[in-house]
Length: 357
Image 1 (cartoon, rainbow, N blue to C red):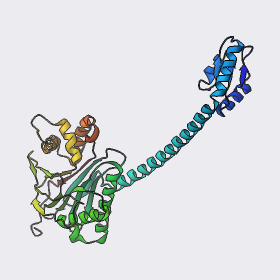
Image 2: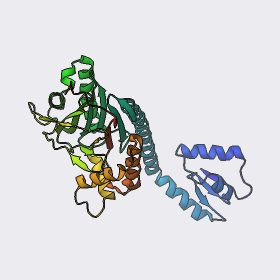
Image 3: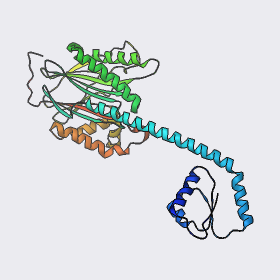
Image 4: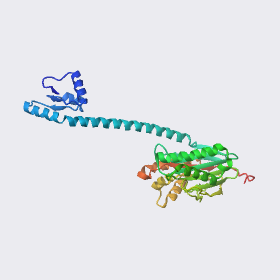
């Protein structure tokens, strides 16, 4: 199609017609000044021949266009198919985004309250996923007779696969709680074995594993019974500023059936803090560590020590969060992990019931 614009600019309806024909793949050559068309529709796809051109040159242009028309038509078809594939991918990404948002909301609703009172003290929760969903799990289960169970678990990997493992662990905890079997929930050893069997059973041929810490606080005796599955050991922060690790170890969850998880009991003092955390806390702590810290465990202890200058439970976790936020941007690539922490603060005025001890 040859259009002469050398005498006068075409009316608007003519321009729209040309654009429609060009979209359909009809080749078009515009003679003359098409500045206004270029300004309004820079991607119109038509060939512009400004000024005066002799008939031989024009014939050559038209001949060249007609000879390449089959190739142009093929390219247009491929372009249309590519656009359709892109549109399909966009729709799939939109669906995935909505599904992830839904999963994220479910995880948030299952979290403990950021600060909640329990028999004999209070518990603070810090939970910051690296993405929309998290492989970390934090749970607080209030039991009978003044006992409270606390769980922090960390599934291998990141994103959706890790979040699915976390959901398996959470479902197992929920079913155990709904069963009403208090003796099971009070035993870190038995609960970790149950979580392990749950992961082994659902993993199939895939290698899926997680770490976990399970602790039960008895407000009658200030006793803390703890079991671990390949997880960072808890820290006890004393009112005088001293720190103590609770050395408890056990195999990872989900690798082998029939694993055993020993647990140990300690007695806490009034105003003691017990900190349970995932290894993402270690990664950020290494970014802020002082020169005297040579390991990730020491870096977390330094973080807890710095936050322990405040006496209020809420201020402690806020100080921890502020310290982490100040340094988490320094993480890169594979270092970016979920951040989870539970902090039990024993009531400073709590008197131990010696009859229950």
